[in-house]
Every structure is written in C-alpha cells, then in structure tokens.
Length: 513
Image 1 (cartoon, one colour):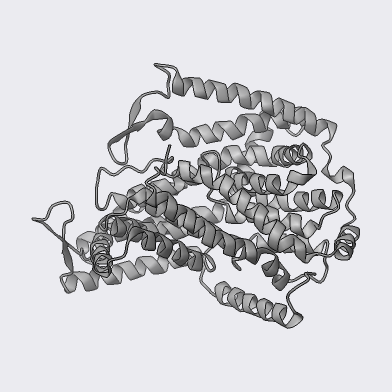
Image 2 (image 1 turned 30 degrees about the vertical axis):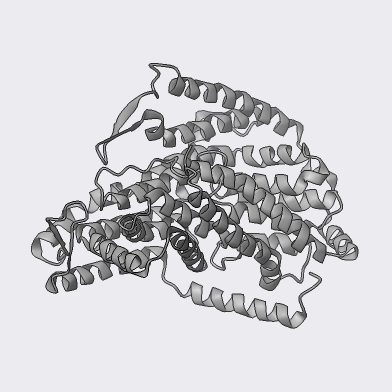
C-alpha cells in the first residue's frame, strides 16, 4: 500500500474509477459504434441534402460543394456495389495484418521476452528506472506485447535490487502506455495513422501526401523526453511513498529470486542468432534503399493518390514484416521452437487469428468512412468548423492543447488509437487544414493526447493484466491502488508533453527529419 493518501481518499478514487468503468462498459462494441455512425451519416446526408447545406469549395472559390443524399436510388446502388472496395481500401487493414505476420512470429517464439531480459540485465542498478521506461516506450514496435512481458519483468528486477516491485511496474506501464506513440524507430502505428490522415487531408487537397515519417523527428525526441520525465516522476512522486518495511513485505510476498531475471543458455543462443539475422537483413534492406539504383531507391507512384513518394516509404510495412520475421525465425530455430516451415506458418496463423475482431471492425469502419466522404459531409463540416475557429481567433498553440486534451478525455472511453483516429481524422484534419494547421501537426497532437492517459484509462484492456501483476506483491491492491500508482505519470505527461509540442511548433522545428 502507499503512504500518503488517506483511506477515505483512496476509496473515493476507487469508486470514481469503478463508475467510469461501469459507464464505459455499457458502450456498444466498436463494430456496433461504426454501424451507428454509418446510420447517422445516412440520416445527416438526407437532412443536409433536403436543407441544401453547402459551402464554397476551398480549392476553387467559384464552386459550391453540396451535401449528397445517400438515401436516393443512385447512392444506395453505390453503397452496395462499393462495399467490398470500401473494406479493402480501409487504410489500416493491410498495414496491421501484414505487420502482425512478422511480429507474431517474433513474439510467439520467445524473442521479445529474452531481448527484454538481456537489456535489463546489462543495465547498472542506478539506471534501471530510465532503462525500463525507455524499453517500455519503444515496446510499441512489437505491438502490445510490452504490456504482457515488461511489467512482471520490471517488478522482478526492482525486487532483486531491493526496490519496490510496484515502482518497477509503474515505470514500465508509463513507458508502454503513456509513451505508446513515441519510438526511436518507425513502427506499424506510423503508416497506419498517416494513411488515415492522408485520406482525410485529401478531402480538401486531392494531392496531399502524409508520409509514415511525418511525425518521426518529434516522436524520436519524445522517446528521450518521456524517459527523462518518467524518471523524474518516479524519483520525486512515486517511489518516496514506499517505506523500507513495505518494500520488504512486497519482495517477500512476491518470492522473487535472482534466477527469474536470468537468461538461459538457450535464450542466449537464440539472441545471438537473432542478432546475426537482424544485422544481415537490416544491412540488405539499407543497401537497397541507399545504393544508387537499388530496389528501394527513387520514387514510386502511390496508387491511392497517384502521387510520387519515396520507394522505401511505400515499402515500409513489408520492411517491418521482414525485420521482425527473420530474427524471429532465427531465434526460434536456435532455441528449438521452430523445427519446420509449418511451425512458422502456425505462428503467423495464431497471430492473425487474434485479429478477427479487428477485421470485423475494419469492415464496418471502412463503410462508415466511405459513406462520410461520399456524402460531402466531411468537407462541409470542415469548412464550417474552420470558419468558427477563425472567428474565435484561436492561435495554433491553443488549438494544439485543445486537440490533445480533448483526445485524452475521449481516450478514457475508447482506448484504440486507430479506432479514434478513424472517425476523428476525417473531421479534424480537413477542418484544421482550412484554418491553416498542417495535417502532420494535427496528427502529432492527436498522438500525444491518445497516449498520455492510457495508463489510467478504465477501458484499457491491459489494466487487468497489470492489476494481476501488482497483486502478486500486494494482495489488497485494487483499482484505487492502480490509479494512485499511475496517475502522477499521466498528469505529468499530459502537461509536459503538450508543452513540448507547443514549443516545438512555436520554434518552427520540423516534425519530420
């Protein structure tokens, strides 16, 4: 238990979180939400067409854009005949599925747990906190596997060096959850979000291109910024709450032994094989992108927009797939987890089978987005919204903070980054673009807001796993304990990371390298 907050105060926090959880759990399934959004789009298109809603085309002042009624015969025919295309054109669909093929092999052969053990075991005790946070932030490269692997490992390592295992869990969860959008590498989230952003931006400018690297410079810097911020919060606000007696009780209850963080001979052999594979494949891909005349040099046409983009950028998802797949296979062969090609495809199948719900959501989301775009409601709402923003005289700094904090509130009820951006991007991106705010900046603000409160979002599915790990060391722990442990990180990130993006934009620093 924590020193500091009174029992009554902790009870109030617990009740508040339980109320939010009850309300959130009453929301329909995300697929049902998108069905509802689609129905709402149909009704609004009929109303808008009946009332002759229109705006001046921001691309050509001599033209008017009218709301199209999707309930007339021609539009209903279009909805049926384009349903398959709308599904296949849903930007995140192929990105997520292809990336997960490689990630699933690396995760299910045991490469990720072994790699995290190695990184932690090589770190001096005084730097354990920032390293745990740094690893957590970068774990988003492996999808959500960090939630499962890192908190129990961090707890064990903290216990081994005589520190509270709950503090180790807190530091790990802050990095994994609050730092979800940041990374020193391009992850599958970057092309996923940029695809949605680009699609939304093209409702105003058909030639708009938002590269997967659009926010890379800012997110790269944010990785180190959040590591330092988390280290500070841990040292100043979280760890001082634990007395020596309670730390000893937690360690005793957890029954941690040093061997729990040790690498086995098989894991060491597997990591060496994975390292060799990573270097070989990475060097080959880098050569393809850098050597003149290489397969990944020059530019190619992006078929969705008919615009020219760097070849390596268009190939980023397959690159991620290969960079996870080959080291994962090498590790699996070395430790005996993979003995035939069948074992590789089985692990790919297991990974894709876990994405069934996502595919269902993608079908309905693809329809709703396509309908919204076809109705012209997105353009009308964007232009009208931009006029309201202009009339209010808000500067970009105020708009950035408003986006971040608004998304943070929404994140308490809908934790999926892609799901929120799926229906926010078509409204926010074009609306703010016509008010002078670039799509990449809107996307960066969204990513900050989407990440900050993840550690305390009641509908974050992984909070249950985290609570189970905490209870290994404190059987009386509940949601109030979890909130008290993680709230300082979320509040600090919400304030400090917002300030960083505002300052970054005010200084005119590019969001991409």
